[in-house]
Figure 1 (tube, rainbow, N blue to C red):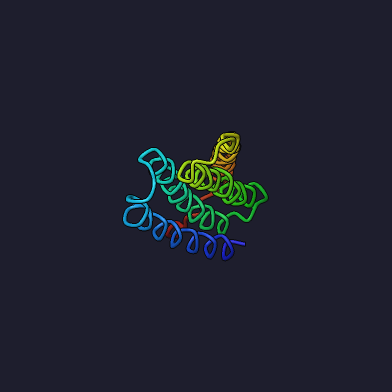
Figure 2 (cartoon, rainbow, N blue to C red):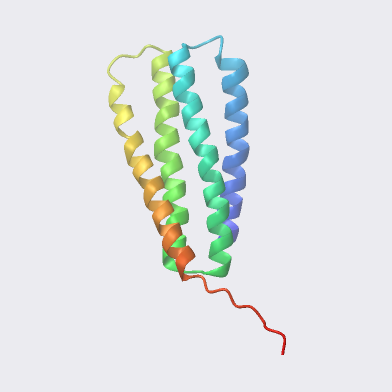
Length: 136
């Protein structure tokens, strides 16, 4: 499973960079400052949690426990809901579509997934036993 987390993290990292560049260069002239800030928040949290997914993959290699796997899934789910809802909200703000403010209610669900992922990662990290060889 750690290979899947690594691949997912690498893909999401590349997308983060691409979307950040898109926001910085293409969107600045097309949408409001408010929508840019919303979009950039999504990119920033996506990129933060790409690192969390990388860390999870490394820990999973050492401790292939269910709690580690759950942490990885929660980080992926959090990126989808948190960042995805912010991208969608920025798009709706940019197109001035009224009645789509409910999309912002999805964001805290993704944030909760991030928090739960970090807690699972903490639990997994406390279960890792470091085995060192002593010279005999």
